[in-house]
Image (cartoon, rainbow, N blue to C red; front, top):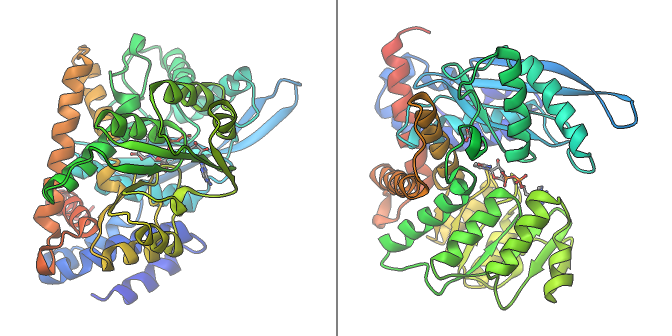
Length: 444
Ligand SMILES: NC(=O)C1=CN([C@@H]2O[C@H](COP(=O)(O)OP(=O)(O)OC[C@H]3O[C@@H](n4cnc5c(N)ncnc54)[C@H](O)[C@@H]3O)[C@@H](O)[C@H]2O)C=CC1
Ligand SMILES: O=C(O)CCC(=O)C(=O)O
């Protein structure tokens, strides 16, 4: 099988979906040489099957705003694969949401969830609803309307959504409340719930903490450590703030955060007080990151990303395709030695090539941001056993899972000269488990 031939057919079947092409091509490039060496996968058409979602649900979400005006949005759930467990993945509320974005995210989730070692299939969903500027009551009404349709398609053994961009604890609470009301049952059909009603300790921190743990594993493997390193982080949402928090815990200096308007550059580094301010500003008040520079008197670069700032380590934690080839070159020029993706697909293929040609440590999101969904898996276990584990216990399990993912990347990703191609390692290790399950089921 040849990559170009596979992609030609794939693009024809999925017209106008660039993000989906990007994600599939990246995986296919790693997997095709492997399946050419193992022709049973070619015969079973595993790659064609794996790049076709099991099912896509699209629905109208009609709700009423505070002025009594009726509003209409589009809701989606892409149930990609339940080969190794029930469908599992986040919900995104953002005006940029469309089928291409959700299909790429659901596809990526397949490999990520497989890497966690837990029995979870893959899905992603959301809406083009824009939470920015909406009142809390409007967000509640939207979530209730969204769940009124979504509840027909999910359940704790079927499909278990969670948060993503624009969907945090508040939105999951509104969604879970409506689920409970409509179904008259209290089951863990969503993760990321509040601690009072079935949520897990460390779930909200898990993606960011896991990303820092993964970076620590990569550095340790090279005989280095996070302690004393200067870090740039993009974004200022859930993943960014908890990546920053764990990096600081581990002795690093975090000097940037950003949002879609610009970047703050705090030469002295964030501290606990400053991070608490950001959590309140971005996770609750939904303000702009520029307010940080007013409060703490540091540089604010309007319209700029953090990649021009001198650093040792970089953590793209905002959104897809936020770090380009020129940014990668700039990071290297400024002394950066390692990149761990907190977001999904934040680095373009050209940027990744630059990192890898330079033999830098580069961790793809499906490995380095898998901590979030891993703790979602632990939340599901707690829900089905009616248990609530301590934060220490969950954090210990999270650390173990991230170390295991790192090891899987090494097992499948060592290339010439001993360099670890983490992207290849994650793709192959993630692929093998799902592909073997599909083979076992026969023609499905
Ligand atoms: N929440 C989770 O557990 C997980 C999230 N992710 C990924 O992490 C990324 C961030 O998600 P969350 O932190 O959950 O979302 P969030 O809604 O809490 O935060 C998103 C952040 O990105 C910023 N942002 C959005 N678009 C931007 C742009 N064009 N330029 C610069 N900044 C921009 C926003 O201002 C916000 O600070 C996404 O790629 C998501 O898919 C990955 C794994 C798990
Ligand atoms: O916790 C989950 O189920 C999903 C997290 C997620 O959306 C992701 O890993 O990208």
